[in-house]
Image 1: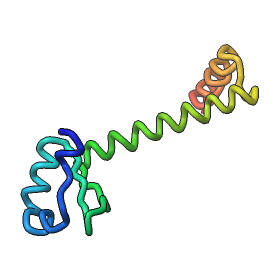
Image 2 (image 1 turned 30 degrees about the vertical axis):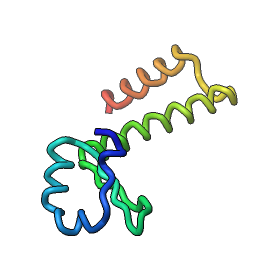
Image 3 (image 1 turned 135 degrees about the horizontal axis):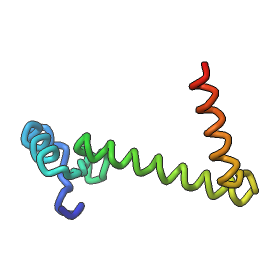
Image 4 (image 1 turned 60 degrees about the vertical axis):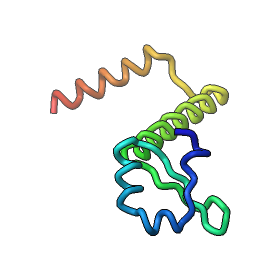
Length: 94
């Protein structure tokens, strides 16, 4: 669904709350609610929201990784794997 088709006034939400929830969750869509002609809130399926949050977290990690690489703050892969192997060996011995 296009966002332009998913814009509803708050009065629609008030009178059709159950229908809005059912539609948003069944179709995994997003609905924009307006108040006094301005977009104010977004009603979104919880699974779509979680997926969006996960995507944002991954993008943040990528941005942080890129910044670290630019600053030279990284280890060669062999050193990283060697450190992991040592930590695993230490845990097994205990």
